[in-house]
Length: 273
DNA sequence: CGGTAGACCTGACCGC
DNA sequence: TGCGGTCAGGTCTACC
Image 1 (cartoon, rainbow, N blue to C red):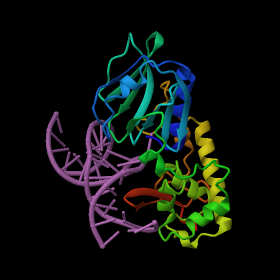
Image 2 (cartoon, rainbow, N blue to C red):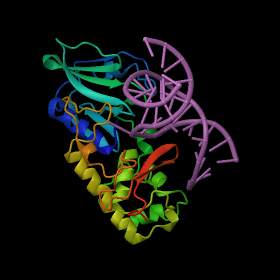
Image 3 (cartoon, chains in turn purple, green, brown):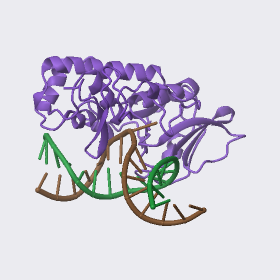
Image 4 (tube, rainbow, N blue to C red):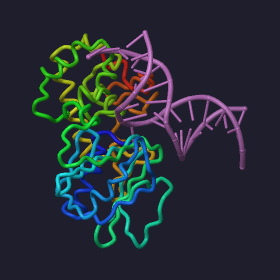
């Protein structure tokens, strides 16, 4: 499901209802999803108050009062939503259930099981997955010059560069196509052929599309819902993604779909150079 | 190190 | 109704 805007939407939804609350219990209905879920997690977080809920790239971090953290990644099909203890009927892919006072439940559901749930103890600083996270697109330290320096030496195409989480963290298949369209840049272009001026435009495009998508509550395709069950609506604002054969919103040329690194890319061959 | 294919998993959809 | 093929919002690992 999720790229940065969807994860941000989930993190905000969780904050509204469980920030400052104490975890009563965590139930693991599976021993592993993409990786094993630590068996000790329930014992470690039981009775812990959630003092912060952060998003780092596409990860959600529940910060606990004792300094421990719960790391969550939604993979391709992961969802988190609220239920009430009295009426809850466990769904097929409900793998983890967090219980809070007054019968409030937070369900982690993930059909494809590409998601991750891990526990990071208080004194642990490094984490393999978090160490692979690059700069946040909204970071003040990410200037056009910094982006240019990261891109200019890369021989691979812009699609792969923007999908690389170590370069910029948070974009995925939808928002890479959308950002490149807004920047008028061909997804097939080599990083070595991008100018500083274009990086400035690209960075603005990335920030604009992500900001608009967050405002819309993310994009709901097949199985994404917000924590409260509402649908995000940014999918109705896609300019190229999933619009093969449809007219470009700027020039009416038919949108093309190509495959890059085994994933679909959508672009306008007239607008994007 | 950079680049790329393959792997992991379930479900929805399409054509026969 | 079933069956096979394709595709899906991610990213880690192995290999060149």
